Image (cartoon, rainbow, N blue to C red; front, side, top):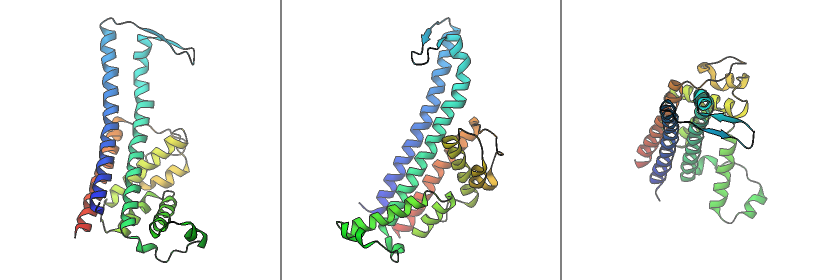
Length: 232
């Protein structure tokens, strides 16, 4: 399959995943609103969580709905947005570098690695995968620098990269530090940092939507730019 078609498939998969997660977010809120209507109409329930021993009725669920939506539903879907984008970008980079691996021509290889490889393609793939694994721990800006080195993209715009860096920094704090901001967040988010050390990340509806929209745009822009360049 031509590299341009591979890139298109990778982007379409990411776009579908981002849409599906956002649909889940909105549909879950619809379910909660529908439940509120049922309760207003007189619907009654009582349920027990056998694992925790807690019991709840319809009024308790209605009271918890905003907290569940804000603290759990929004957090889960936001993290999924960023995960889908990361998977896209590194699959995208792998395919680009596989298409043009010559930038690694001076990279030193352990002779044992060469002897164990079944083919040249396996060696090339292994070098690229190791390089990408190292890149994952670099600042997000370096991810796009690597993409631009593989094929001149001229996107995303600088301010969009700054915003994407803050989105990833927020996701990392939610993932690894229970949402409590630390110095790592400040370093990763840079000038777009929205919090100070010790603050707790809050995912307002506007920020949640803006993040999803920017991630979708970044997927579309880098894919179109790469395909346009490679098609020449």
